[in-house]
Length: 384
Image (cartoon, rainbow, N blue to C red; front, side, top):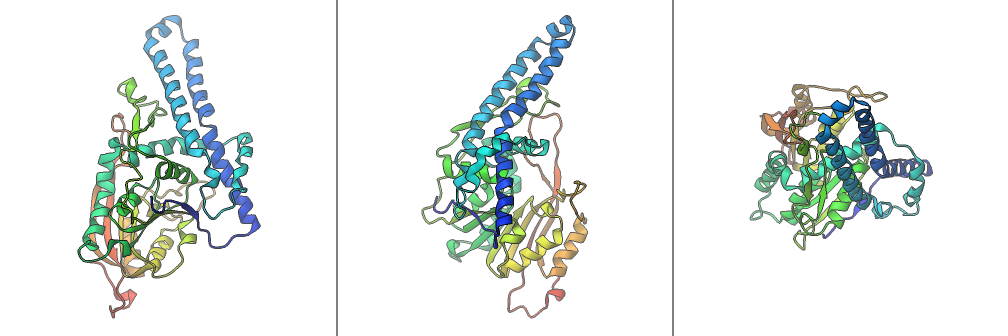
């Protein structure tokens, strides 16, 4: 890849920040390392209870007992993938002294929180959404509309795609940003989560070829399985070679908090957000930042629901305005709404064979920051 390095782009640093970041880094490494032990404990608990049941019940559940053995094998396989993910992660940030986070050996002694361990399990599902053939339908409904809008507004016959700078905040494992860069645009993905950054670094920089690895993403879904194999079904990745970018492609991933990293005004031609804007404590701050960092005449393309990740979390503040209010904020800040669709059916890392599946009715819109020759003030610009 032309530029696949991951950069830690915090604007200002002090020793206290560095120590906090090291501790956070080691905490996430510890969660990945503890995946196997934690997951097998869950299986062992079930096996212990199974052995306590009456003998004739156990006899009836022989196939279930065998299924638990298969779950163990899936967990062991996942752990081999995890070891590849965290191998050399201390050196993945190009502008951070590796002697800092490289002390992750200390992480072995840390006992991760349940929340962190669940995030490791959730990260495994991201392989399906972003880099597997099984995730093609989700990508078709979530990513393709965004890509099509970019190509429509910045066609290769009317501009030089490489001169068009596109930002993808909340890039996850990087597939949307990759698809944009693959079409010749200069694209940067931004991600705050180290769970995602470690894993995207593995896929984008270390996976070569197609379907060379196999993960078992649904192995931790113990309920709502119609057949046992629906829990132990494997998924191969990546479905496309991440190295298959044009020689001139400009593609990078930037680590850090969106609000802290992106402060330069009038810098981006397009910002594409997919399942991202509800990841804010204050969604207005996200919208305002998007407006400020777009060039005059620049586009904001968004698709997603309003789950509001910090809602009802202990020790976290959050506002949860409805889409109608969010729309008022978008227009009030100065955007012109050029396209808007509601009730767009989308899913997020769903097991397609589960007896319980969640479906969002997302919002898809395209907004424009008024060009400099637009003599209307931001307060006078409205949406169509």
